[in-house]
Image (cartoon, rainbow, N blue to C red; front, side, top):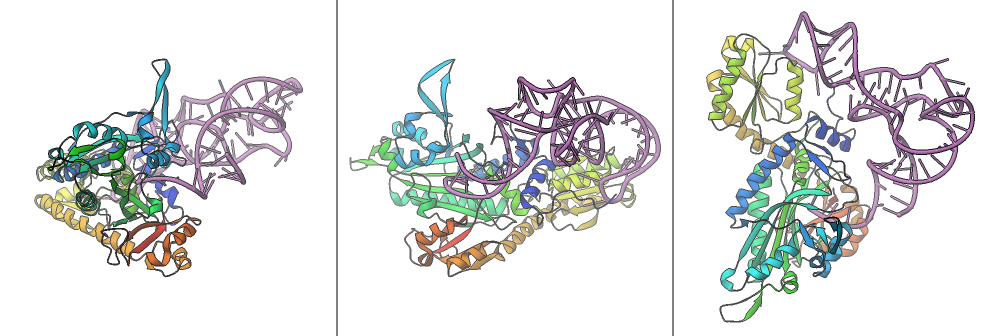
Length: 470
RNA sequence: CGGGCUGUGGCGCAGUUUGGUCAGCGCACCUGCUUUGGGAGCAGGGGGUCGCCGGUUCAAAUCCGGCCAGCCCGACCA
């Protein structure tokens, strides 16, 4: 009745472990078209929580939500040469509609810079129209060669922000602000995933950008996952789409732009940053279910006590669920909630009722304790705070133990077998970067020696953080 | 697109070398009873034109030809 293996252990086969979690925690599965995914209710609940938290921060940063079309005239893409070069291999193109050949094929958006900027061009006439700060939640399609659920799918869900400013400095500051106040804050405070911030090298830059900033996280197998990006687009799109305005002195000027996004890939990051051999570990601030009240077995008063307690927990602002499926064995249900990473289980059985207590079990760490029924809501609330911090601290300690300093490409190769390597960018350079690429090792980001975000990619003393990535 | 491999109930697989008695196993699912404090036990049961098309043969999951799909490793990427 005990100890049966639920998942392939991470150490044995990490990709297999990931697949097992997707299935057993009922997160997502493949769609019928290669590279597409069906996101199941629990997986989607995680995404909805992410959306809510990110959306709130985006609005606090002053951007408004809008929605632009899924279909983009093919001609729009080719207006920005780097952009079209970067994306054309992975475009899905519609050539027929209504039973006949289309005069001009339309592409399914791989990202919306082109169509959004076509409208920015109409909306921006005066310096009084700036800054223009727009965000949209959407699905996009990129025909990926090697899809993996959540991490790299042909269709994925994301938010993309697009802004226009009067000066380069203002645009840069806003892109950096989004990186820090929206993305980094969300990832560290809510997802409990520590991230490294920095600049992309020219080789890794977004097609059409003059500067790409990013957030990189380490997964439990030591590989890197790019969790989000924020780009300075300069004036290339402004030029191509003629986004110009009259400034206060009556001169015609071009805007400076940014774009930035995070996607459903973060669900994959959440799984791989915190998950263990028992399943998912969801940090409390994200968790769709923060506490599940489990009826141990069907006995006098158990179901009533569970529902009463769940009501009190909900009233205390805790996202709560009751599991009174006593027809299913207790062990199985416990395992299920563990697989789904619910932060706290509140277990109530006849023994607990007798003693006027409930058993609290914490997913991260596995601690258990008995708490008087009336004290449960307060105790759960305080435990949740501690759990959130603990998950973040554990992830940070884990990551830091797998980052090594290197001074030669050979040392970088060695260190990236198990984690990240830091090497002076002046030492590595674009030549060293190209060399490492042969072994699938890439520069994840350039940052200052103290880990902070540079003001420009040309600063002396920048450090290249290298790793294998998803 | 280059290199390696696989297609058999929902999932994971055995069977293919040596054609027949092979359509099977584990998990999952359904019913009943006993269970329930870490994936329960027993009994009974449902579900598969063996990727598709064609060929050889008395007989094809098995042999032959063609096609299709998927997986893994590389170039691309949120």
